[in-house]
Image (cartoon, rainbow, N blue to C red; front, side, top):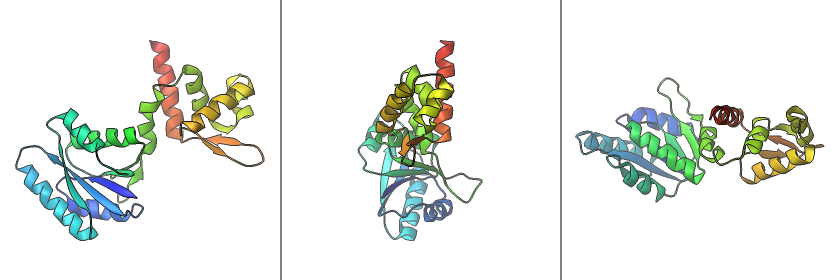
Amino acid sequence: MRLAVTLGFESTLVIRAVARLPRADDYVLLRAQTGTEGDVKSAETAADVIKALGRGRDFTVDVRDLARGIEQLASLDFDAVALAGGPRSLVLLAFVAAALRGAKVYVVPEYAADPFDATALATAFRLTCLTPAKLRVLAEADGPADEVARRLGIDSSTAYRHLEDLAEKGLVKAEKGRAKAYKTDYVVRVLARLLLQMNAKH
């Protein structure tokens, strides 16, 4: 796994959080280029983290130009990102880049020792392209196709077709058993419901 990590000025928090994440083969430490004296401090933080991890590389993202910053991040090869610190614009850009490439997203909160998986939030970008019919099925994607169909009041073959398409898109997981069941993250179901509500208002 190649893990990208956003950095601010605090190295201890980042080192502790990275130790609690799945082990990475490579670390890319993302720090903001702001044109201020903070650039020197974040470079020192990156050096401290690389020393503690025993490997990794420093990557500077120009957050003064958001388009340039997202292009820089899109050029990177990574499987997961840990949003651990740095200017808000760097964290936002790293989240968008991870969402575009379908990478795992971990958040390192200031108030807790353990990072948490926030990958489901990144699906919001992909949900906006779904039809209302698919969003309704996604909002109920928990169980076999016939149960989903019954809850929605639709034909089970229609529910099955939508669920299979959502599974191909990586939004739903098909679990094999006596009856094929479909599951998705609760956050994804909530996002689907919210999009349906917002669409109904327009």
